[in-house]
Amino acid sequence: MGKVLKVREVGDPILSIKCEEVDIKNINKDILQEIEDMKETLNFTEGFGIAAPQVGINRRIVIIQVDKEKCTYKDCEDIPTTVMINPTWKKLSEETESEFEGCLSVPSIRGKVKRYTNIEVTYYNEKGQKIIKEEKGFTARDIQHECDHLDGIVFLERVKEHNGFATKGMINKFNLKDKNK
Image (cartoon, rainbow, N blue to C red):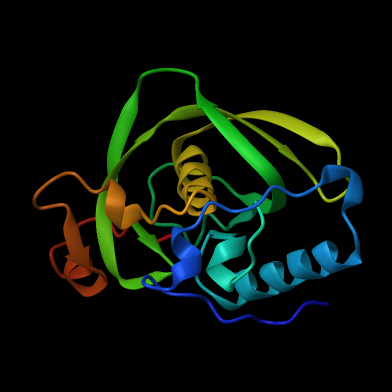
């Protein structure tokens, strides 16, 4: 069982570095414990994903987990807890969509971010097995958002529209969709 770790907030230097790759041939007990801690931390939040640097770990690890009943995005699907080690993705089409996103590391601000709607993600699981999957909609957005963290990018840097920011409260007040996690 893991422990809940402190979620690092924007301004913390670890959120602006490119994380180190995990040696897939050496997924040891320390790495597995970090993964368990990340899972426990994600379960403690309202988020749909977490990246290792968000809890102070300099490794290319992402965990995605979505309960569509709690998701306010229009195309959410249930995603069981999925550990992605050294994830990479590529677009499968030019189609994009701009939606408000939130982040555990930026708790009170939402930003409108353009993301590809259909991607292919490649990653390794905890057993070192290579996985290649096609993802679309919110799941594709979630993966792109979390992978940005592994490259030292917070979604605030991706907002291009001059009216592309809102507080969490204002999104609700003005009936904008809260693209929270």
